[in-house]
Length: 154
Image (cartoon, rainbow, N blue to C red; front, side, top):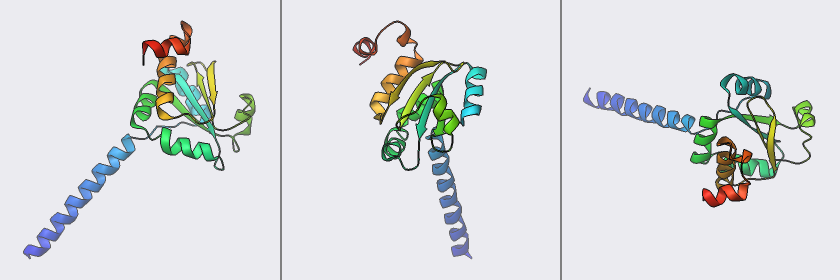
């Protein structure tokens, strides 16, 4: 009887640990939106939009998903300050055509009403993306060049 109770306690303890770790993993991922929902949410929440165009076959898209979009600082900054939108360039060709996407990955920065602030083609390492996100989020792009921003915010 005593060993049965211990076994149940062990199972419950492991279950709680697994649930707790899965909750923390979920908290450490980017909350991606589809194009329409993200654009609507950007306006409603008055937040800038970060849009990432990708495709399943794209090697650097996969690299960016694994390295950049799992970085805790990138995840936290995007979730707190932007509406992140993920667009599959092959499946959403109308959206890709609207933004004249020629290569992947391609990252776009829009204001809350969907107007283009700027874009960056290709793979972006986490530390570089953080700098760009801060530059855009703080509206520093309106008053200074990126190189000047980086001098003031190393």
